[in-house]
Image (cartoon, rainbow, N blue to C red; front, side, top):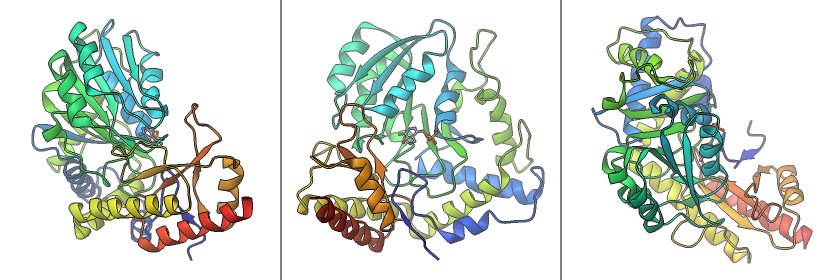
Length: 365
Ligand code: PMP
């Protein structure tokens, strides 16, 4: 049945049990059946993000970007926000906040590198921030940022710290609590391995319910509208703010069940081992890796393709049955491609991917 191996940036390699779990008769959002699916899924969100009882888990319709934008819930007019960006998705934070009446300070790194904690510390020693945001795994380059150190470097000057774990949660060690992060967010379609359509977050409970009249967030993405629904689901009573994508949440619950069967640590090890095999495989073929050594993620690898048209390379790989992503970082655009090794990726997928890369390289040289 498998037509193509999807080693894109998410959705990535799928799982039939997860897909089929979403194929049900219509189920009401107030039904006991859905409430128990939500409750189990909310527990799953807390577990994969290493968040204990001080945090409220959220499952909201939308995607990773919706989860990012929902952090505006905690901003007021004139607030100062610090964006630490390692690439295109780090920049997305700035593009979001520029739509709102807040002041944005921005620190960025070159492609394949990370903003350094000492540079963040310098900026944070001059200014006080309402919110600092960063990206755990930068999908445009495959860089995994030293989140713990970055948070430590700004913690004393930033009231709130939010981490984008869209390309990491489920495939990397993530711990809101140990990191001392106030918000960690992700999307359903990446290393968690559910279909797209959901933004997932954990938020420190002390932030909730204190919005006041000077709030600037949109209506739909105001987490204070969603918090009572999440609490209602946790209490097995249910709740409504806007209609949830019910069948996608059935799939999400199945993904969390499978992750539990596998064991979260084993799942992270599987991602690390797939990443290691991918990296050594492409290096054996003479190709370079975009992320600097020591900053390479378990979930995404950017591969340099000097002298070869990357779009054509990716097209030819897809024709041979493995779908990769082209590179999107403006500094390297057209000169690299990206491999997503997350979700339900297996050794066979990795072997097939490396085989196809080798064939297409020969063809294009
Ligand atoms: N942040 C990161 C690190 C991402 O990889 C992505 C998606 N590629 C996003 C945010 C945006 O997520 P979505 O496409 O689900 O809105």
